[in-house]
Image (tube, rainbow, N blue to C red; front, side, top):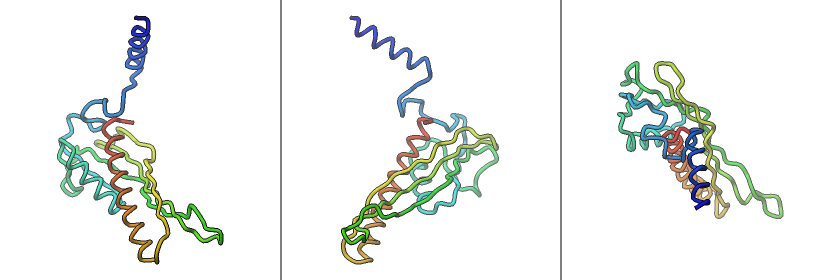
Amino acid sequence: MRGLFITLMFALTLSACGYHLVGQGGDSGVIPEDATQVVVVGSAGKLLRLFRQKLKQSSDVPVVRADEATDDAVEVRMEKASETMSASAFDASGIANQYRVTVSASLRVLQSGKELWVSEVISVSGDVFVTGGAVAIEAHKERVSEALRDEWAQKALGRLRSGF
C-alpha cells in the first residue's frame, strides 16, 4: 500500500511540474491547433523534401509549398542542416577502413513572424565500412545516408509532436 502511495505521489509531482512523456503532449505538438496551413522551408535538398513529405503524410493540417502559403501559415524552418562523412577507424597502415556519416539539422517553428518553438540540433549517425572499390563505397554511403535521412525525419517529427 505504501509503495502505491509513493508511486502515485511521484506521478502527481511529475504532472504538476509540466513533465510529460514524449508523444503524450497532445496531438498537435508545437503546431498550434488553430493552424490552417504549414509550410516547410530550408535549403537541405533531400533531407528537406523527405521531412516535408513525412510531415504531409502525418499532419492533419495541410502542408503547402512556400509560394502557396498564406500570411498566417505556420512556418517550419529547417536550419543548420548538414551531412558529413569522416574517418572513424583505420587499419594498421593508417588507411581509413570505416567512416561515420552524420545527418543533422535543427527546426524552428514560427507563425506571423513570432517564434513558437526551437529545437536543439537533431543528429543521427551510421557507419560505412570500406569494402571493395570507390564505387562500392559510394553506393554503401548513399544507402546509409538515405536510411539516416529517414531516421532523422522520424526523430524530428517526434520532437515536433512532443515539443521536446
